[in-house]
Image (tube, rainbow, N blue to C red; front, top):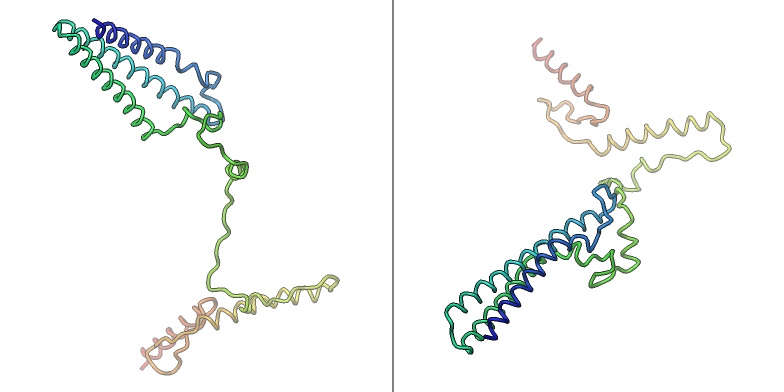
Length: 226
């Protein structure tokens, strides 16, 4: 008879606890957070509601199962020792199922909204250095320029000193494009076969494309005249 009292009482308690979690659980945390909250607390509220309502449903189902199984065993009218053993097995199974559901939930969704670090319920608190680093927004990295060294003529442009005249300043600015053209011509020279051995030097890509096309047109005109 003891196993009947235990099974019915424990099952009814689980059903009542599950109903209470599903009904009153969402209001225990983040009750003052609305959907237009600019912070992340609304996301925490959604996760908390999902967890507490899901756990309440599992407890209610487990309690109902224990009540039904206890009632079926009571109809079979076994010996007290057999009934107590059956009640113990059912109780252990229900506890394992509840913990298994909690483990599966934590494995999939984590502890977001349940043990919130911002609310002070985390297993580990963030250090001040980590918290400051999280608040700092990332900056865009500068583009990396390859194949350019400080020894290139581009970096050797003269810098005008304070107190110079306007003519000296204009001359210093005019020297920079000439250095860039010379550096490009030195770095892009290569051999190109125009069809004869007259001149195989290709001008630089920065300013010699028109000259190369002009040479090709001249050779085509010479071939058509011959």
